[in-house]
Length: 401
Image 1: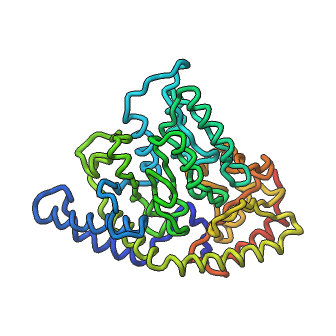
Image 2: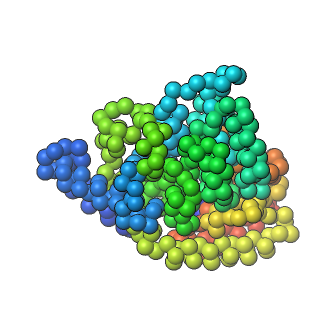
C-alpha cells in the first residue's frame, strides 16, 4: 500500500480537477481565436480566472479593476515574471558606487527567487538576504538594510518574502516585512511566494501587504503545468513591472503563449474545491499533525527530533534522524512504499547543503540527516503509522556512511 507523504513536492489530483480537465478537452479551440470554438474556450478561461481570483482574494472580482491575475506554467515562472519584470520596468541610474538599486529576499528562499536575484546581482543590483534563523524573519536586520539602502542612494526596487518555507514549514511575517519596506520605499514592489501556504492558510494579497503574489496548481491537488501570478493595480499603474517574454500578447502581454486551458481548468476546479472545504481540510491536517507529533515522541530515545520553527504550518514537518543520511533513510522508506523527501523537490538532485536549513540554523551533520514529511487532507493515520515504523527500523538498522 502506498503511503504518500511528499505533498509539498506535488499532490495527487483531486476528482474535481480530473473531471474539469476531461471536460475541458471539449473546449479545444484557441482562446485567442475570434470564431465560435475560440470564444467558447475563452469563456471557460474567463470563468477559471474568476474562480482562482476568488480563492486568492475571497472576492468574486477584484476591488481594483486594474488588478491582474495571470496564468503561468508554474510558480517558478510566476516568481521570475515578478522579479525580472520589475527590474526591467525602469531605467535605473547607478549610485556613486555603481549600484543600480537594491533587491531584498529572505534567506532560504526557493531557488525560483534566489537564482533570479543572483542574476540581478550580477547585473549591478545590491542583493540583501534577510536572516531567518529559527524560522523567523529578522525584522531588525531588515530595518537596518533599508536604512543603508536609503543612505547609499540604492533604492529598494523589489523585496520578496515567502509565506511558508517549503522545507521547514516556517510561517513568515510577510505583513510586517512589507510594512517596513513600504515605510522606506513606497514604490518598491513587495512580492510573496505563497505557493506552500495557498489553501492552507487564510490570507489575501492585501492582508500580506503583497503587490505581487504567486500560487501553483500542483500543490493544491491539480496537475502540474498551471500556476498564477497576482499583480496589484497600483503596480500596473506605476508601470513597475513590464513583460519579459515578448510574444502574442496573451495574459495582458505579461505571459505570452497560448494558455494551457486543460491545466487551468483543472487548477480552477481544485481551487474551488479547496476553497469550499478549506476549514475541514485544515482541521484534518491539524489532527494528523498532532498524531504525527505524538508518534514521533515515541522515537525520542533514538534521537529522532524535529526542526521546529516558532510559527509553523501543520502540513510540513522537518525531521532529523541522527546517524542516518537523508538519502539512505529515503531509500529505506521508499522500499516500504513510504514516500517523503529530503527537502525541496527542485533541488533534490543537488549535492549542495540545504540553504533553507542552513538559514534556519541547523548544523551541517543534522542537515545531512533531515527528511521532510508533508501532509495533506488526503492522508490518514495509517500513513503516519507506516512512516513511524519505517523510521523506527531505519534508525535502528542503518548507519551513516
